[in-house]
Every structure is written in C-alpha cells, then in structure tokens.
Length: 79
Image (cartoon, rainbow, N blue to C red; front, top):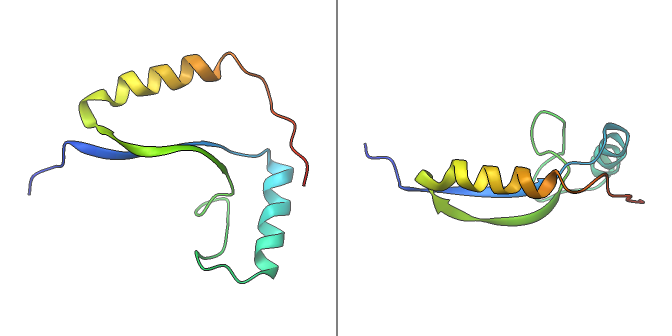
C-alpha cells in the first residue's frame, strides 16, 4: 500500500479549559450532526485554516505556524 504524498492539515485555536468545558456542556444539550464534543475527541476549536500540503513540507509548515503563533498572546473570547 503506497502512502499519499499529501496530508490534510488543520490550524486551529483551542479554547482554555474553562471555555472548553462550557462549550462541551452546551453541545451536550444540542443535537449535533457531527457528534458530541469532548476533550479526547471532537475538540471544541476555532478553525483558522484547513487544507492539504505535501507530506515533505510538514516540518516547514509547522515551523512557519510556530513562528507566527509565537508573536501573538491569548485572544479574548466571550460566549
């Protein structure tokens, strides 16, 4: 079986634990077409980018994301 040269990548912001708990609790009360949110699967998140990259470029993309992310502090979010 050959391995694809492309992989899917998602760049997301994960909320702090207290917000994650609130979002999971709200999700438990609603019927979700994707399934229940949880801390071990189906993480609550804000998607920034989704796409495919060549597997060979993963380390380069990871380093770019780390460099950009290091320039920003926490983002205030309200529910």
